[in-house]
Image (tube, rainbow, N blue to C red; front, side, top):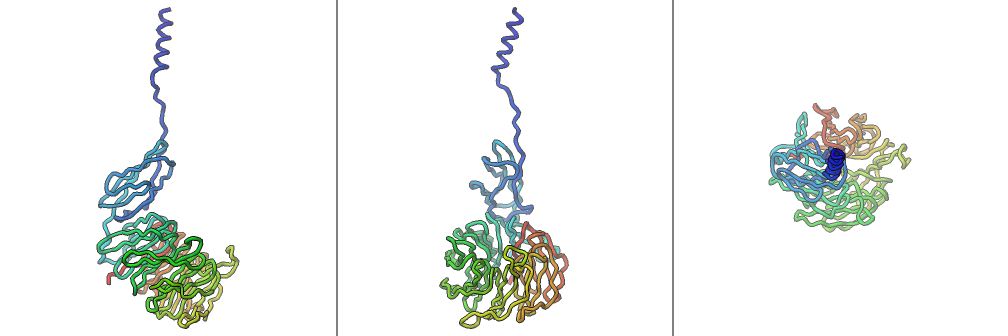
Length: 406
């Protein structure tokens, strides 16, 4: 009897005692570029492996604001994401600011921000500028200001070199292409959508932001600083807008070609080249092409038309050799056209996967290849690939700009 009572009391005690249950917590990862980040970067912290809710913490330089990490200081920081369902930790290296006295290449990478590279082979990647969004284009002015815009966001970013300072400008929705006006100094950005239409945004040197509503889905841009004109391609209505760079008034809108996507301007500003981003194999079921438009007179008129192209997308004008370079997203090649006749001037340049917006700087043609995370480089005099190209860059590169110390 006594033994049975003891066993019963022990059973009650065990039942009342707290019991430790195993807790299974997922080990996740924090998505970021495999590069040091520049001070002034902003990263939208994305977690792979588990979902919210979770808290974010930083050990080291920088700060957390909601789900954003703002990079500051030097050295490195450790980001920690912790919640009921998971834990993730990542060390973020912080790069030194760029030396304004050294040339570099800036690549707009949709996945990783603006990635800075050495300007000579092997074109080593040095750092990334995170912009709290996905950049689709990049431009650098004569003072060394690096500009980009978030194609999936509502802001533009301008980073000055000397001294290094990063500023974000809100109210710039769904930016696509951009360019600095070398005469007036303003930055112009095309907006794919603003209140149901395409638009052009101007950011002046003092930081003021102005908009002008244009046609449907504004994307391509070209600037004539001498005539103070900005040309904008309205993709979904097949027109080009001419906007006064000072007043932001739309001077004219004219039909040019279906799905007019990218633009380039001759050195003297008399000819505008426009890409029709179409393909017989695409849902548009129409051939792609390039047209030349005489814009020297009062009324723009098409004066030349290329042969059918497979699926053209980006364009660059080479005044030194009288050529156009047109990237093709289907053939993984760059078509080389005569700028006067728009006939083939050379066999297509075979390049890496899904070439996007080409750029020319001091005799070199840069071709970002979105499909292979590379940038190809050709000598415009010989049309030969340069040593060290193509070189690896960040994820999904779309555009290139080069800083050359004046």
